[in-house]
Image 1 (cartoon, chains in turn red, purple):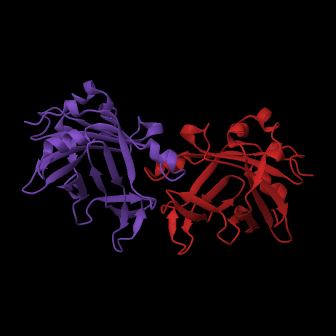
Image 2 (cartoon, one colour):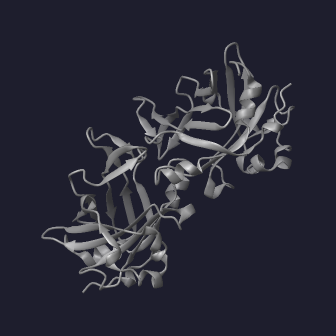
Image 3 (cartoon, one colour):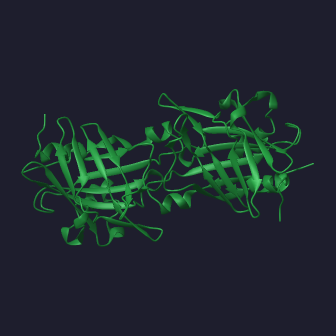
Length: 197
Length: 197
């Protein structure tokens, strides 16, 4: 079993190339086939552990719509995931599935996304992450601002993820499936690459 | 301009291989990349004009999730689209993009889907189709029954389509995107294959 500040277990569960293909096939036409690839960055990348993340439609893996670094910080009773993006995303794309390229990345390329940090708590059998409160993780779509209200739950073999955008004033759901969360399973594990000092 | 019972124009606008790829790319991860292929059946297939329809995820075109025949019947002030499925769907898949196979299909293979007929009305610049009232077009997903409340709007160059499932008792939306309808454009036109006697 794990515990509320067990960064090592959380990293091993998250470090994988995930796919929801089965869910897409079972629920046409309501789920795009998404890939989420999260892979450990070298131990000296930032103080503490980091995962590099690429999220993409399966049909255009080479043009991910989200590229991030997640920085894992154990707090008193939970784990904080700091979110960073890359100043030049084009320059790093592909690193998730190319360990040589991954090794060339530097924290100097990062830009912090303060309102998008996530709080991760141990549920007793899973870790559950939620964007920190405050509506500060903003997304503009078709000229309209919304705030991200993302959430995930992860175990050793499954990742459940809500991708949601809400109205800044009314909290109304503007983006996201009403047919339920994304359900990912692992295509490839990178848990053997996790090193926690 | 067209008019409320102009089956010929409606057929020419619908007869195409449609894709919403641009919409998927612009709105990750909320829209799957869908293909809708509608192609004229031979004039003697049924009395009046028919389109063969295959709807599929682009990443698995060979395993469409919806295969239908649409039968166009002009009424006093609108057009009725009768919906048929195939008793053995596996036997006909691929006919949408294979005119030789399309020519081998027979109306003896069809099964009527009475509650799923659509009423199509002329809006002044487009045709708008809606499933006939009555909640009789039923779909079961994950053990729960729902009724299809589908709708489309078509012009010469664009197809807008709502794929919705609602609760039989409360009418609550159970399936479908809150981020808006599918927006399709034409990859290939089959309007030159339309023959209306």
